[in-house]
Image 1 (tube, rainbow, N blue to C red):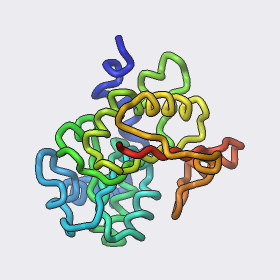
Image 2 (image 1 turned 90 degrees about the vertical axis):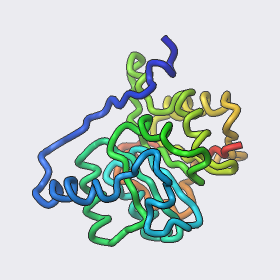
Image 3 (image 1 turned 180 degrees about the horizontal axis):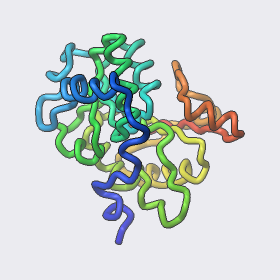
Amino acid sequence: MSEASERAGAFFGRRKGKKLRAGQDELVHTLLPAIRVAPGSDLPGQFANPAARETWLEIGFGGGEHLAAQARTRRDVNFVGCEPFVNGMAKLLATVQQESLDNIRVWDDDVTKLLPALPDASFDRVYILYPDPWPKRRQRKRRLVSDEMLAMLARVMKPGGELRFASDIDDYIGWVLARALRSSHFRWTATRADDWRKPYDGWPGTRYEAKAIREGRVPSYLTFVRV
């Protein structure tokens, strides 16, 4: 069985952690349905500002710190955040409500169920930040980035759009580079070491990144352009 066919349409992470607090549970039942992306419907029309300059996607946003920071500072951009882990979704929902971030829409299921239902060239930028590395050899088929995933992303990205991938796991960095470099849809932008060693401009960081650095792991920041 190929890597792509093994990975297609499967989410392998946890769906839920500790019990949600009452306020979080209420947001999951009220706010989440209100801002959940409706597949098959006009994507810009689902935002408060359908004429936003750009639309960005973040896959696996964890607790939503990076997504919220971007949405807070880039009110001219619309954001779609995907995160099946309900506790992480609940954290982002609280921030969306508290700060009235009406430029965020979310998807609380496997991203491979959403992407095929979206129009071509929907996104100007895509983030995949610190995904589960599934380090054991038998687990690698579970990794989010695969040949098939890159093809799916290429379809929903605009030409010239950026795919940004960050990780502190060297093996996963090499894995992603190998697949992106053999893809006809993406071009790696790096011309010198600092291009992948230094964080992106305006990078707010993530909790996972801070933990990785404390534990002595060195993050890499890859940027690919949709050709």
